[in-house]
Length: 221
Image 1 (cartoon, rainbow, N blue to C red):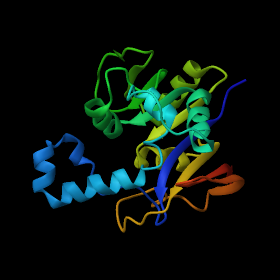
Image 2 (image 1 turned 180 degrees about the vertical axis):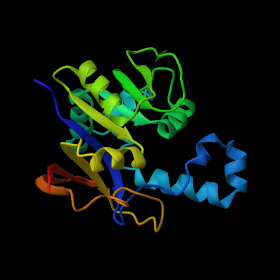
Image 3 (image 1 turned 90 degrees about the horizontal axis):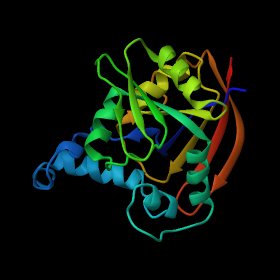
Image 4 (image 1 turned 60 degrees about the horizontal axis):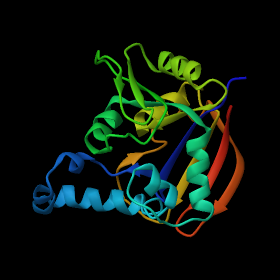
């Protein structure tokens, strides 16, 4: 039996999943300090994701050392990882991650990158292999489903790729970690959504220390 297709993201109270730019990842520390725009974008990203950094599972998965917080938020992060048999992402997210992930990328499953770039599979230590798909989101999902078996497929991001899957009617479920921050601008999770085709059914709401986790089933309207 095939698993579900889902996404799981952090989102600000005003609906943004990332600041306007992530170019600060490519900048040297001194460049970030000199450029207020890059410095602000980095601060916004860190604030948006602040709930995840102290968690034990996050620290262990990225080889950041032992220790860390346990509790329900840590369980949710671990459960999301364990249900995922394969991931799909856009080229922009891959480009950002290629520069910032450790050598042992934090997926430990096949990852299918939607891109126009032709590139051989890129195998990383720890079980992650990136496959580069040149014929669209549906093909990437088909390949991810085949690789995932009876586990779920996660649409990892970024926001534009998630929205493309939502509008194509290919998402079964999603979770939002609603962070108590306001960004004012940035990458909107649902900006451009085809609201006439998408209906949501609440599954659960779980408040934790730093964020509220909201989970919805997606139905055709």
